[in-house]
Length: 315
Image 1 (tube, rainbow, N blue to C red):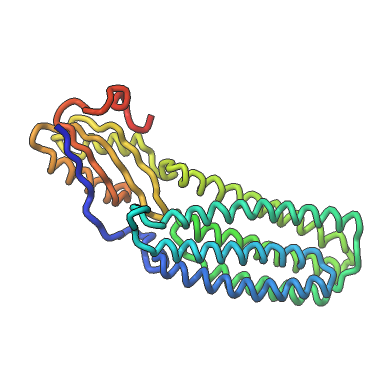
Image 2 (image 1 turned 90 degrees about the horizontal axis):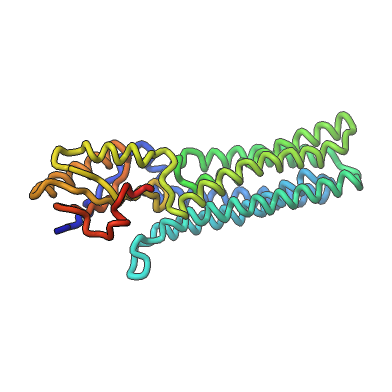
C-alpha cells in the first residue's frame, strides 16, 4: 500500500530570498535598467556615426541587443508573477529561465557582428573624431556602471537577472574598450586600436555567454541544481528518521530561480509514514533548501515496475 504526501507551503527563509530577490522587485530593476540602456544606446549611436568610431557603433549595437534582452527579461519577470492556472500548474516562473537562455544566444549573434565589423575596419580604416568618441565613451561607461549597480544583488541562481547583468557587463566592457581606444587614437594616433579593442571585448562577452547558456539549459533540462549532490541528498534522507528503511526514485530539479523541487519514494516501517515524511521535509528544507517535496511512502516493496525501482532515482 502506498500513499503520497506533498509538502505544505513554506515561506522562503534562505539568505538569497530577501526583497531584492522578489519577482516584483526584479521587474522594477529590469525596467530601470532598460530605460537607462535605451537612452545610452541612442547617445552612442549618434556619437559613433558622428565620430566614425567602430568601438562606439559596436557598443551601440551591443546596447541595442541588450535593450531588447532587458525588455525580454522584464517581461519574463512580470509573467513569473502570474499565478498557476489549469494549463500551467507550476505557473510561469520558468519563463525567467527561458529569457536567460535567449539572452545568452543573442550574445553569440552580437559577437559575430562585432568581429565582422572589426575585421572590415582593420582592412579599410577610416578617420575617427577621437574627442567626440572619448566623451561619449566615458558617458557610456558611467551609465553602465549605474545600470550594473541597479541590477546588483540578484539571487545566485536567478538566470534571468544573471542574463540581464551579463548583457550590462558586456556593455560596460564595451564602453571601457571605447574609452581606451579613444585615448589611443587621440594621443597616439593608433586608429587600429578601435577595432582591435572591439574584438577583445567580444571575446570576453563570449565566455560569459557560454556560461549563462550552459546554466540556463541545465535548468530547462531539469538537471540537478549545480551545488547539490544527489548521492549526498539520498544518503542524508536514509538517516533522516529511524523508521526509514530505504529511499529510491529520488529526483531533484529546479523549476526557476530559487525554486527547488524533489520527488522520492521512501520505504518505511509499517505505520510510521507520517513521522518519516515530516522528517524528510524538515531535512530537505533546512539542509538543502528544497521547499517543494512530494514523497511516496511504501510500506512494503515498491509498487512501480521493478526496472524503475531498482537502484536509485538519480541513475
